[in-house]
Length: 73
Image (spheres, rainbow, N blue to C red):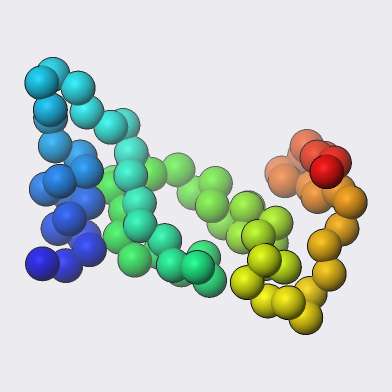
């Protein structure tokens, strides 16, 4: 079974009248392994935010800008 068929057949299926609106499986490096048709492309904006967690040579900053919004930690 491929990751795409897992998303399509298991994550996006109807369960007792409930279903997800979107789903994706992403690698730790931010690569997309599988996604539903309506999965938002927001993860492309989030990738730099998580980069320091999987690449220790990068430094964490006290704030990050995602789109036009700035977040502080």
